[in-house]
Image 1 (cartoon, rainbow, N blue to C red):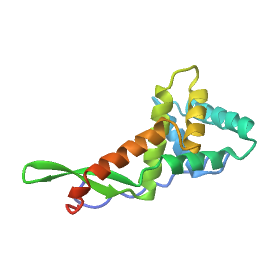
Image 2 (tube, rainbow, N blue to C red; image 1 turned 180 degrees about the horizontal axis):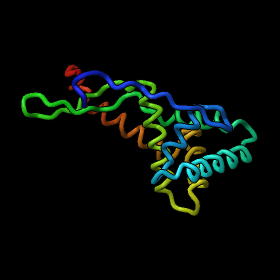
Image 3 (tube, rainbow, N blue to C red; image 1 turned 180 degrees about the vertical axis):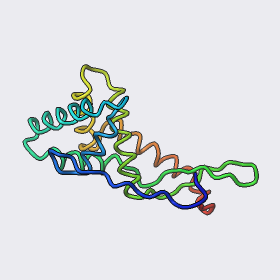
Image 4 (tube, rainbow, N blue to C red; image 1 turned 90 degrees about the vertical axis):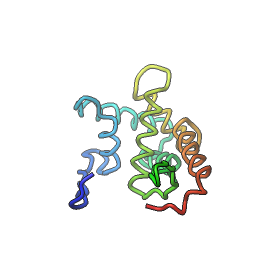
Length: 156
């Protein structure tokens, strides 16, 4: 972490098909080993499958899934007098979105089955219905923050 100044926030370009920065963020999170065209193919295939099932805009379902999977509280480690405490902190909106995307894609990769696009589709649908592993991960983080509520006075 730099001591000089805060890092500038990068501007993410919009997705060419959906004209959405959210879609670009998802594609960048799916990205492995620099293969962006493959990540785009996976994302568009997933969105097409969601479109076929719900007959609605798949970005709305994705937004709902992200809203359901994004945590409001998390714990940060703080060292005081040789002891490390987990201090609960509120999550900003950008970080919440980023964490939700991370949870959804991570849990989709862990799912059983064939094809990442179908696994990602199922995880997004589950998260939009407030079920699924990504939502469980969010609730687990909330439980940890709730358990360490006593240390909330040790703010950063």
